[in-house]
Structure formats: C-alpha cells, structure tokens
Length: 291
Image (cartoon, rainbow, N blue to C red; front, side, top):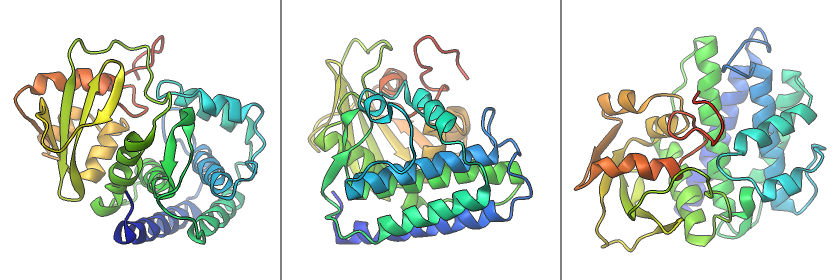
C-alpha cells in the first residue's frame, strides 16, 4: 500500500520516466523505424499515450479522450492472454502517429496525473475489472515508459538506464496491491493450472518480501510466515524486462539479475504459466504461436 514515502517516489518516477521518454523520442530521426517486430517508434509512442489518456479518464471519472468503439466492454473482460488484442484494437482506431502531437498528448496526460489530489490508496477499475490503486496506476505507467523506452533506445542505439527503485514500484504498488484487493478476471487463463498449490517468495532490496500462492485457479498473497516452494531474488529493472519478454530467463539468471532457489524451484515454470505478464516467452496465449 502506498505510504507517503512510496507515493513521493511514484510521483518522482513517473515525472522522470516521462521526461526521459519524451526527450529521446523528440530527437529520433524517423518515426517509422521498427522498434519491435510489430510496432514502429510512432506505434509504440501511440500505445503509451493511449494508456496515459486512459488513466486520466479513470482518475477524473470522465470518458476516455481517445474514441475507440467498444473499449469499455473490451477492457472489462480482458485477461492477461488477451491484452495484445486490446492493444491492436486501440491502435487500429487511435491513428495519430505524428510524434510531436503524441508527445504533447503524453505531456498533458502526465501533467493531469501528477496534479491529482486523489488519495493514492483509493482504487479505480482496470483491465479485467481489476481494482488498482492510484499509486498503482502511476507505477504501471512508469513501467510502460521504462520498458517501451528500452525498446526505442535499442532501436536507436541509445543508452537507457532503468532505476531499480522506480522499476520496483510495478511490483509493490501495482501488482501486489492489486492482488490484495481484486484482480477481477485479469489472471484467468485457459492455460493449464499446476496440479498442486505453488507458493513463490519474491525478494528484492527495493520491495517488501512477498509470497504469492497459486491454487484452486486463483492467486493470493500468503501470510509472511507461510512456507514457500520457490524463492526468487531479483533486480527489479532486469526482472521486469524478463517478465515482459525483452530478455530471456537464461540471460537474466546467468547475469544474476534473477536468482532462483527454495526447496522446490522446479515448480516456478508452472506458476509463471499462469501468473505472467504479456509475454510469449513464458506463456503464449492459447491458440497463439510462441513469439
């Protein structure tokens, strides 16, 4: 839960990530350079803008400024396997690709968010009817800026440092707080569930030690003293890149960005098949080929 110190860090992280992202995109020579297999630089910026604009609407209780047919109905039933479908639908209808216009929209949206007087512990509706705190929205948008900034920086061959303290907010304020409240249908998946309960303890010097348990087709935060099967020690910035498919598990483990241990570490893949980010490396969506 976002206390005053973490809320201050969340504000600082969002402002810093947005400024760095904007500065890099503004100096790119071409908006059509490929940044990922499917998206150009302009597509990537439009995606980030669409999220920022959505969050302004959630915070202010207004309609989303970007007109996308059926968006609210689609968002209500989205789960982690169908996030890519939502992204495709939004980008098909949000057709602005001029970087100057997009960066102006991003700056306006971030300014609105940072000016909020809302309680950072209050919640709003998110994908799949999950409940996310205001602090969690800031953490998630910061992570979007950091991860997609990494994509753009790679394409432009620019450095892109990712502060671990800022990357860690994704877990502490977004993911863990969402699991404490309600994740709606977000983690519902047609992929196979493990036969046994699996508990994974996550440890980092930038986050509170937290154990997640998967069983009976649901996920919850276990009491601090409960036993666990797997221990994951992680450096948040690189862990996020791994979880979102930017680097492989083997690379993260070999660099010791992620250290896997505990009494039953072999149970981690079954856990990550369900509790995963949009990432074809860890768990391709049912019916979709592995990326």
